[in-house]
Length: 528
Image (tube, rainbow, N blue to C red; front, side, top):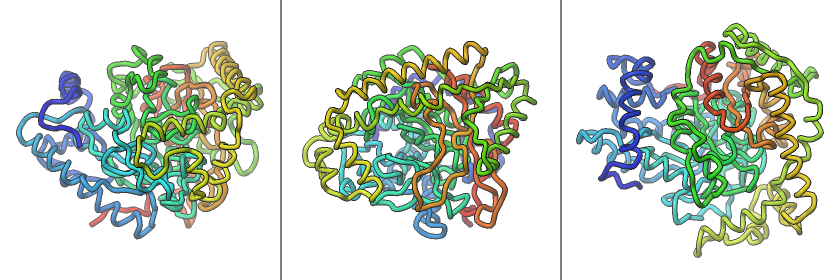
């Protein structure tokens, strides 16, 4: 739990920003103080407005989220999105309320923001299991770098979410937590590997969420749950203290219900961390505020590339394609120029850039070494030999540990070179066409049935294979059915070259504000 007895670095550095936002941008979009607070679809702005108006306390906010978790996670629709609820949540909320009442102001820009962390983010006060039975009592000595920054900014870590075990796959099933269900269609999975966070955010189990993304594991749940997901530029956000898959491909980022909340959380997460030296590349490359890029007219004059070979052409692709064509038409109506193009070289090259299985043993053994003594699992070999993972993940782990040469393998070196080739291929095509961003569906088909194989036909490699940033946002819903009364969410994704997060967030925000696509799932209604 953070020391709340003195102003944090965030409260000192962000006072000016907070006052400006409160007086200007935020005030313009906040509800009237006379309006009662509504938990469902709440945003950081609406929560802070209610605190200021005196109509909400941190303890009340946390209690309401806990009630929803109690009602819907293991009961009712039984989403199985949550692995651990913080035992200190109400105690921390009381301390935050005390600080607020004493007139010292909010602890920071995330004051009393109840956050759901994917359960591969280290927390010193809760286990970090990554959904695995052998790891259920693993207690890190310290928070992950990003978690420490959130707490310092005033956030409250409410719970840790279920996931595809060890973040290896796209359907979010684990030996510890079971299969997460999609709240929009309880017969389907919620995407993965951060599917617990995705289902939790969609069902309003918390205010903000986080995920990790080796392949498309932030963006797949965002797409499947009508959410916003950000995979940042390689080097922008530290990954230290997050259970790894790959030194090259792993990134972490926000999963939220709105673009503004994703921007606000990203502002806190970015920064240099000597324990993750790649973050040195991001020093000086991010703005003081991502929120400042959020303009309703951002798409006016933008050149948006539509990369045809990232769209399916078979009948199974019809629902996703129909949503995407409506999104394209909407962007055009908002002043964007649409540039349709093909990049046929991508189809083969994108299959030759994955490096994770060559790096898995090295990065995982380093993670266990950093945990320190007294842990239930102390090496990748011990983990594999425990045979506690769900069957598909156990097979993956055994394949990874069987890679003898690891990063010394010639195939690894070839794939590293291919990643640079892909970066140049995509960047040069964008420059040639004068494109500001590329638009495509994160998943070419609707999210698949629960308890089935891995999610097919995802387009995450365009970002994970280049290191370029990508923002996924709600584009629309499929045709309603008996199991999906609102339809199944379809997520669109925007990608551009390094450190263009402000641009991508701005475009997504403009679309969000004009189209108002997101709606909460019917399976988790407001509690009485």
